[in-house]
Amino acid sequence: MREIRKLNEMHIDEYTEIAYNAYPSFKDFTKESMAQYKKETLEILKNDPTVTFYGLFEDDEMIAVMRLFDFEMNCFGKMLPVSGIGFLGVHLMHKKKKAARDMLKFYEENYKDKGVPFGLLLPFRPDFYKKMGYGFGTKMNQYKILASRIPAYYKDSDIRYIKEDELCKLLDCHNRVAHKTHGMMKKIGDESKAIFGDDFNRVIGNYDENGNINGYLVYKFQNGKAGNYTINNIYIKELIYENPQVLKKLLGFLRKQEDQVHLVTFNTEDESFYYLFNDPRNDSLNYIPYGYLETNTQAVGVMYKLFDVRQAFIQCKHRNYNHANIGVKFLIEDNFNQRTEEIIIKFEKGKAIVDAKEFVATIKIDIAEFSSLFLGCTSLKGLFDLGLLELDHDEYLQELDRAFYCNQKPVCYTDF
Image (tube, rainbow, N blue to C red; front, top):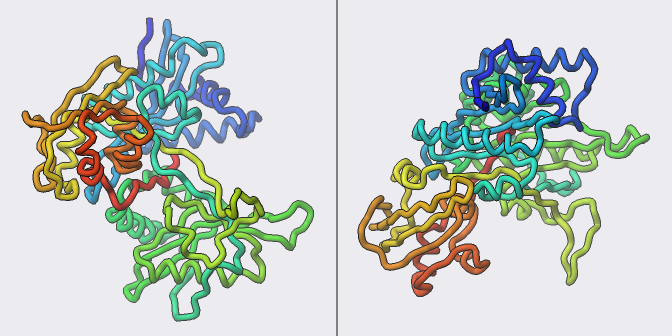
C-alpha cells in the first residue's frame, strides 16, 4: 500500500536520511552538519507557509520526499499563483519503483484541483521531466567578463552597503521589478533569509532621492587562481534594477573594482546582455569556426508544465495575443497522464475566447512544447520548423506565429 502524506517535525530524521542520500555530492555527512540541516529544515517546515513537505509511504515506510512551493509569478504582466516542486528524492533502497512518478502525479493533481494550472521545476535530469510533459524555459547565460571591460559610470550615484535591517526595502525593490517582468517570481521566506544569511555575501544598493532602494547587487568574492591571493574575482548572485540608469550605476560600481578584481561573473537570461560590452568575450579563448569567439556558456534550467490548458487561458485572459483574429483547435498530448486535451480557441482582436466552436486550423502538439509556447519561451514557427508541432493548414503559420509572439521570454532567478 502506498500513500502520500504531509510531513511534520516528527518525520525529520527519515526526511533527512532520504534527502541527504538523494543528493550526496554537496553534503557534509558529519553529525554536526546533519544536525544543522535538520535545524534549518525544521525552521522552513514549521514557519514558511509557502513550502509544504510531503513523503511517500509504502507499508508505513517513507521511501520518497518532496517539497511543494506556492509562488506568485508574473504572467504577461499580472501576478498569478503558480506551483513548484523541489527536493524530490527517493530512498536508495527503493529506486526503480516509480516513486518519483507517483510524487509527480500527486503534485500535478493537487494543484490542478486547487485551480493552479501552472507548474515549474528545476530538473536534475531534463530527459526524465521532458517525458513527464515539462517543457524547457529560457536558457541561462553565464558571462565571465574582465572587470576592465565593464562600462564605466562617472556621474553621481548613491550606492551603499545595504544593512540587514533594510531587507524590507530590498524586497520592495525586488517585488516592483517582478511586477514588471514576465516569468519573475516574488521571493519566498527561505530565499529572502539567504541574502544576509550567507556570511560571504556582499549586498550593495542604489538609493533614490526618497531613500528607497531602486536596484541592488548581491555578490561574493572568489579566488581567481589557486596559490595566488592577489587574483580576485566577483561572482554576481543577484542583479536587480528598476531602470537602465540604475543598471549603469551598478555596473559602474563593478568597473571601479578593476584594480583589485580580474573577472566578474554574471548569470542572466537576458539574450541582449552582451550588447553592454565593447568586448563580450569570456576568459576561455575558445573559437568556433568560422570567426566566432566564445562569449558565454549556456544552460537549461527551469521547466514548465500546464496542468490545465483551459484554465491557463482563462487565468491569462488579460493577455493580448498581438491583435490576432483566428480560430484554432489544439490537440495537446500528455503521455504522462495518458490523455489528449482538445480545446478550441478563438482569437478575436487579440483576446482568447475559450471553448469556441469555429476554427480554421488544427495544431497537434505535446504538452511539453505547448507549455513552453504558451509562456513565450519559444516560437510557434520555431517548433513547426523542427517538426515539434503539426499544423494542418500551413498557410496560417505566420498568423499563428505572430499571435503567440512574446517580446520578453520568461525569466526565473528563483532557486527552489
